[in-house]
Length: 122
View 1 (cartoon, rainbow, N blue to C red):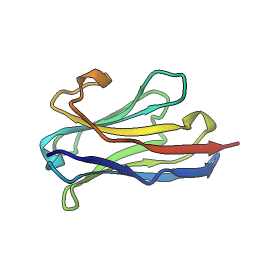
View 2: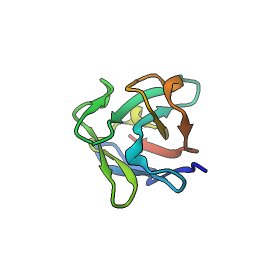
View 3: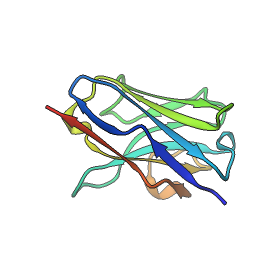
View 4: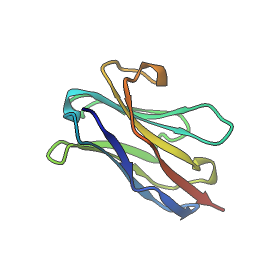
């Protein structure tokens, strides 16, 4: 069975960095497109980044482009989200998700993790 688990969240000051990881104990992530989304209280789930099967093609949401980097480590069956120059508005629960389509829409993804909290202080 598929089990997606996000890790690496925490509390960081503005301008700092965090590295999130998405691991799957039931599936091989190289067989899926993997996306990162985030959701703050009272707000809609927002697209952050997506990576294709080979890892050679990536796409980012406008609010994080140039600051965040998504990458694969197929040997460890994980996908990372490196977050630099963090801002208070980046505060949210971050989710990884897998699917077969190239999409920025949350509804197009098939499997979701439980999420990890990222809090950026002023």
